[in-house]
Image 1 (tube, helix red, strand yellow):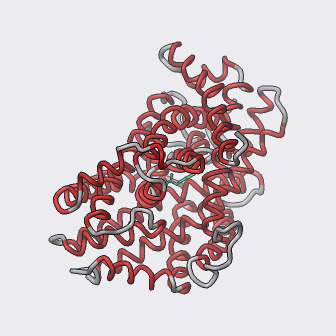
Image 2 (tube, helix red, strand yellow):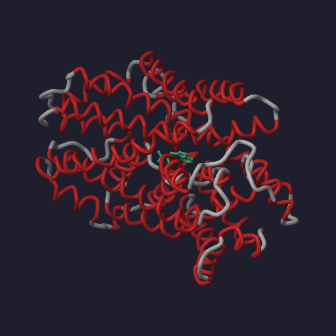
Length: 450
Ligand code: TRP
């Protein structure tokens, strides 16, 4: 097996942790987690999500990093080589393709929402929310998403920003995330402080942590599991390709645990900042994708220096989204460079263009095409459902099966290099049995087969 990737290598373990945490912490934590928790009734959903992180997310993250580091190429070529090494079918390279397609689809709508966050940087800086009521804030949001040209402009800008970083390799980002992630954490804690002081904090906490299982549906369980994959960036090769740039001596197990903990902490803090404000202002926790854009500005509108902190918050959210978006497209770009003999620049232009075009569908699904529905869902809803609830868990299932059943024990144990044999056995049981079975049961349940 190769001992380095042709695309380069992280400078240290810390650099990898920051990059992978940068990938994991993003819109999923601050925008998506609160609104899907709200739509699915809170506590019970949060508990299932946490269980999925522990029992499925962490072991699959270890598997993904391990496969990436062993293959040291784009996920498509990595899977092809590892399958050959294990004497398994070439068919496994399809796992890489599934990931590349999922990455395009996710980034296409991710960029549109990141565009909303950028627009909110400007709005907050302008002070329009100062003293605004809940209704006033909702109106501003409603008018904004009704305007396709504005959404398209911000989506385009975000795609350009993403492709600029990917074109230059990930070294620059390595430096940026070092400052951005801690800054995001500090602002989040400040907001939780505000929510404690001014919001209906107890109501928020009990909504998030008091499990009422009568509110949970099998669809909700699928969403919780899908989100565990989404928030940890698993199931499509993003973490695999980041793993392919990981120096050989770094321990994979503890690194994966750190990344998962950091990611979960950010999501829970976001929930604690948002729900108290939701309840204190009589807003609906189930108001969907617009939730944070309709709640947080109320808080900022009434805080001392709120416009400043609000602006800063959305700046950091954009950066969090930015450090995630690059990982969504990296597998495709790495493959184009490896197989199509393209320069990184050319590969970025092509991959970026395709994503940008698909993103137009999401832009329109909030306004002109809001009434065009497939199975009762808009284009944005379909993309979100298909990727997070189906493609990522399916990708994760295949990764677990490959790591648990196809790869030889010597190879997986050697690459993981865990200190204690007991931890290896625990991991093996999780990827071999628990994670695949859990994913399959949740799938079957969601389509009403069991
Ligand atoms: N994890 C990121 C978030 O929570 C999104 C993301 C980045 C992602 N890379 C990914 C999701 C790969 C799935 C797969 O915002």
